[in-house]
Length: 472
Image (cartoon, rainbow, N blue to C red; front, side, top):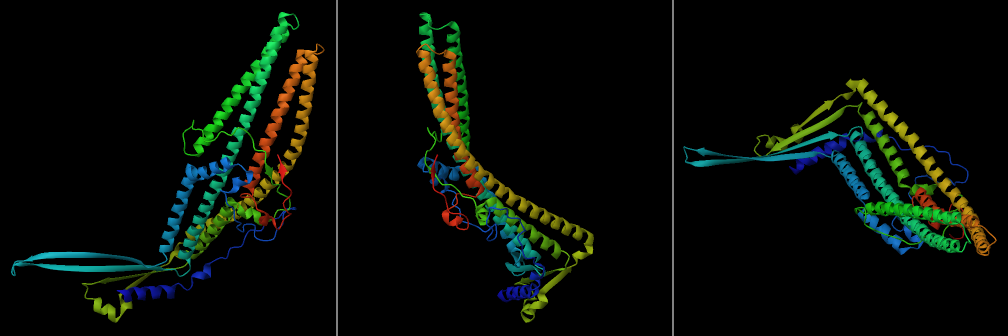
């Protein structure tokens, strides 16, 4: 039996020597590198990126622990992992088709021999082997196609993980942002209640009018209504965060009470294009491009004849001795001529080529979109930083104006309306400043996601050096 298998395998190797003839080498699509980017290699060269450690750069241990837990418990990520396993199994099945396929069976029979008064027992075994010679590389390219799809599916999983980390961090900071707004709201409500009490007390002595009391009541009612909206917004974010952890809405996974105020690195211009190779979606696009190229080779190979070999061996067969004398005589072969269906094969080839051409266009678009996202985030980083300086100046000025109007009103030289208006202006300035801090944090997430994770200094060696860190 061993010799039988060896003969079949030997034939298969002899007949598969033409496989590489129809294999097309992959050439990365040509792209235009914009000014400000350094092109020093393949844009999809893989650069290491540890998604789980990405949040550590923000100096918040609670956030880091939360992200680690999300990566372990998120349903979308778990489903993506199962899709990877399915694709890997498919690739394994296609690889198995490259080798001879074995099957066998055992049969037994017992018959009562009335003449002898006993039973006759007989047993037999049979082994079958079949093999399709990969003459033109169709089977190997089919395996290549499924292998690239499996790798692309794994990149999809990494992309899901990257999105999950970003979403977790954004929700974490959004909850913190709402807590900041709620604290401001509570402070403003307390201040408004104090003002209303003052108006009511002054009205008793004729120092304030009914109109001024009504204006103070209106101001307090608006603040209370806005506060309820903030409470609802925060609850929705808490529910969204809970769902990320495979938990029902209502479960509080995190409730940070303030936005971070830590040093954040500034990503410079002049980034190397290779940095985009960290992006799993870009790597997946290239792998699917390679997959479609392999499919095109398969469509080419379908024009050529296929040769199938089959053989069988049974222990009870009288042909056993004949096989041992001439093993090739026990091997049957069949040749199929698929090119007789020329029109259908040509249409299949045209379809495969069109799919590949579409993938080339989509790959370039994905690369340009990734560059756009990086450029937008870098530009937004600069603008938000500058805007933050102006908003801080605006808040300090609004606070000074409010204090002046408060003194003037309590001294009898100003109106209540001016004081209330100055309070409203100060509140809006303070909220705008908090919003700017939140937006800057979100923009850092967008930038890191656009780069496939936080870049390290060694990854920027082909660009400008990292600038000095800055406080929010």
